[in-house]
Image (cartoon, rainbow, N blue to C red; front, side, top):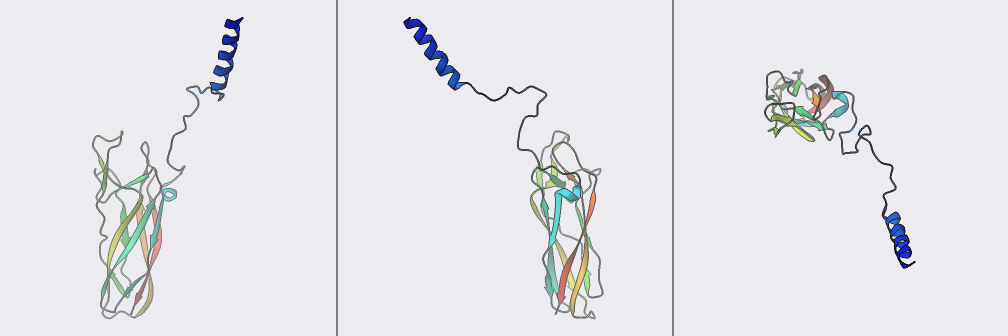
Length: 174
């Protein structure tokens, strides 16, 4: 009788310790922290600028900030391999402003399964500088420079087709 009581108590304790979640099979996805679902490079990368003030015949540096969704990256400029698409920021001269070539930040180097060596990439927030100079004979006042940002967003397994993101930069020439 005593043995039956001990066996019954043991079963009660074991029942309380049981994990009541349904068992998983190899066909069910395993929950891990994965990148935000996205369907294009444009959905992964957001671009913003900050207005700039330049004195007439003066110079300034504009900043273009890329916000890259967690779990994704874009290739740095220059890209590690010639077949990779580098991030590229361009702006054209206006009647008031001369635009120089973009200055890209140092890249992060990361190893991915699909590449034989580590790749130069940008992740998270990345700032790209654009040198500007007001034209001596240019009019004073506000102008808006069109900015084009070409990116190709990738996660650890795949890359989306490249996209050109368009924005503007407000410049006040004083």
